[in-house]
Length: 229
Image 1: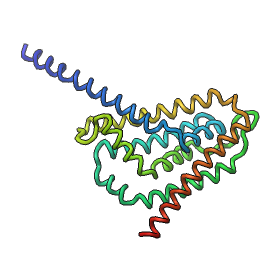
Image 2 (image 1 turned 90 degrees about the vertical axis):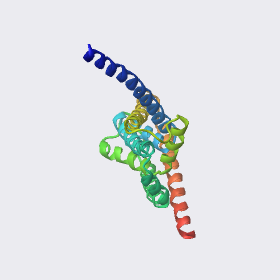
Image 3 (image 1 turned 30 degrees about the vertical axis):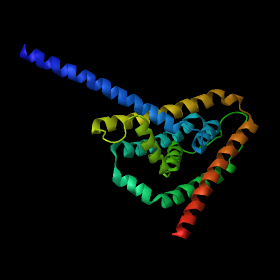
């Protein structure tokens, strides 16, 4: 009987723990989705990759961005102050590198071919290259981590998270961000046959223009800070 009572207590203690962890996971998923969902240059880049090369390449780009969001989510969840200080203290360098990369991707986008009438463009870049593009473009945006810190506070998860809860949140962030990119690219693929060459050029130029604007602003502002330092 003593063994049964001890086992029962352990089970009763496990159920609330699993319930609490599930709630933390759900909040992490919502946070990851919210961080990824705003339409910006990365989203339009994913749309262009899906239209030009197929849904796998758009998803690969999005998953790269999701991994970058997860990295910053981990920094916020675990409260890694050293990394937060590093990001804060080197924002100029991050903006310079990230801005230059955005400009390079934008120039490549302006030079992209029109959407062929028969389907996808042959010989697309590798999935790894698309993944790396999404990862780098998002990773060199240190302001993302401050967005996570603000959202964490809004969800009542700011500061004091245990390791188990922090790890659960990080998993949720990746799942939520990945879910957004899967939904976006699947939706684009579903209506892709209705998008003609004129629409593709408009999407392509809009994505490239946004990337160019963001990149140029990042580089110019970084140079300005260095000049006034």
